Length: 542
Image (cartoon, rainbow, N blue to C red):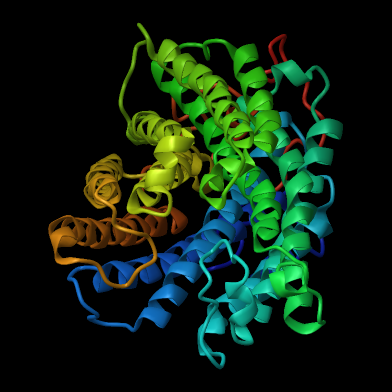
């Protein structure tokens, strides 16, 4: 049984390995316990959410095309900004990386499947009601939550019933993340093929192992913050209400103790993907593998002591500001090590620029820009000036869109031949890359200037002098949105339907790793018996 559908919608039957009693048709997907099917479901769900979040972003940009209130009232505008953030973070980026993890980790470590197959199914299906609740909150009395994606008190105490639905949805998504993480950790630590030591694991597996620990550490903290919000709203507690002895700043501390590791949760798997693609197309081994592993681990550890750099403007004592400032600057060092290693891998390599490599190089370039703008935000005296302006919006979109999203596109183009059995059309891939890269920069680069000039975030209106840059950003945003529709219709759909030239087992000549030791498309079951590996655990020896 193959991991792709034949044109008639049935599972392609390869005779000998069609296991008895395997569900077919819709049951195959609803009761899926196979890591490849669940990986596919995650990726399709994440793309759907990306489009929903993208539509909200375009409504925001349509409103900001001109000064004055054009399309929506300020309250609805705030609902859009809030829900855009929540849907993109918890509905698009995180599930997409879990989709990659489900598909690739068992293949890369020579495991037969994930450790807990049914829990894997459950952690996916939990996301559907949560996403429906988030999206459906627009239709509740008073509309969707409008407190910003950070859900800051005291605003959250004043929201309508949709806030409770939002809190419930976040709880469910958190539970899904924790289950997924446990599954990934157990799979990696217990199910590696004999001979694959920890320091021989592929970088993507390493980054996900560290990410999974981060998730287990911080998801309960978010759950705590939003549960305290819930009890403040309904059960008479005053955690965040000064009138009863509480403090709204405490919410910020708890939220950002989750929130900053969270941004590394969203970037570490991206680092893993890029660390596979760059060596494959530079035709060299990854430069400094051990330092990459240590850098990833040190980013994860340091991520816990930088949270209050989101809070310089809350009246923090100068000693606190100094601590968080230096800690934030320190975390840029391991990140810089990674960028250095990628560039050193490319140095004097025999590089070719197929679509995965274009996205990977695009990622390195634009992510580094986003890193530098973040370094500027880390300095307390500067941050006090640019706090809550469009400069911040520009910074985090440079690392989240050009970071996480570009890496996912790179990963899709790199592994799609293994998933679908067909090569993605190279011309269409390149069109998608250049269209995305240019429109992304047209959208978000002007925002740096808007922020430096003092335009605040999350406002539906702005003074006339900001019109030009906002119009450029809005045009860029719509162009960027259409690029992703093009990607789905002309790249993803044909690949899913099996249209295109047949992919060889190893479509990229210098690609290394166990995933290239199985046929394309990857059979429904792989590595039922643990494979025997060569000395560096990248090939199977017969």
